[in-house]
Image (cartoon, rainbow, N blue to C red; front, side, top):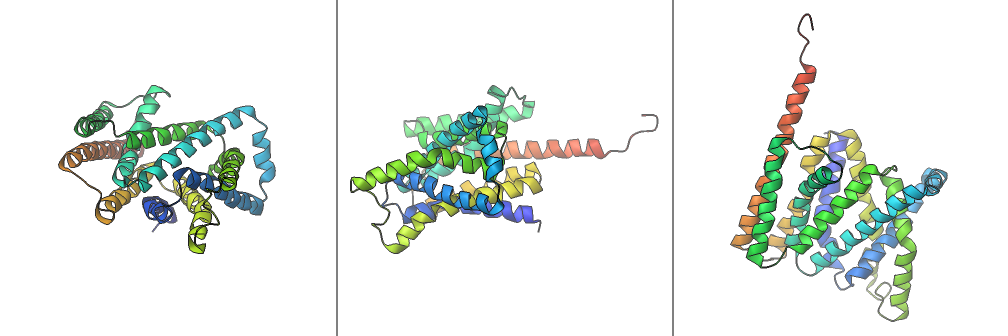
Length: 301
């Protein structure tokens, strides 16, 4: 099997099993987990940069105010996404967090149309509208917006939008993002420690180790994903991305026994149908374009 496919599957499976990781340290407040994730990720990424001897290249980019602004906004969106996700998982709402990442691809499409002025093919509008109907149905049945799912979808969608215009690769970009958040994160963790409410160092040795490993757990799938994205077709990346929310959904329903009522099944079913239509339309369009490109020219053309 293509190594790119293996890296892609590995990245999405790690993301899919994230609830197991965060449930293991659910006694730690979500804000502390998020900032630990920032601090340990920065240390891990900084070591990788040192090993590659690429600090001069990264430093040259930091001298550009526009680059710093883009990555500061990206860092804030990523931190917010991490915080909402951790809080959602540890408050027993794994199913709704999975919904956020099922919706995310269609949110990215919507942001591309509204902000980047990208044009959708006629058949692409149908799944976008259908997903909207699914979210509206879940809202009416639940009595309130599925805000965790929507917040996750839009924060990660906006993060992806910024990364689309950002100049750095995955390793350098994530290093800069965590570097921007590092001092506020470290300051907060030292503050809660001074108040006697810090968690690190006050847990069992294995839970302290789990918390410290959050840097590797965060950075590794992102780097695997970057490798996969460079070596396999984008259409295949698009299909693989559903591994993560599918695993999260199965964990929520079958392992954590979260309620999955008939209205939720209908709402999720509408959204899954929308995703299926969107994926099939994209696949068929790419096949059609490939046939046009590969078709031999007629004599006299």
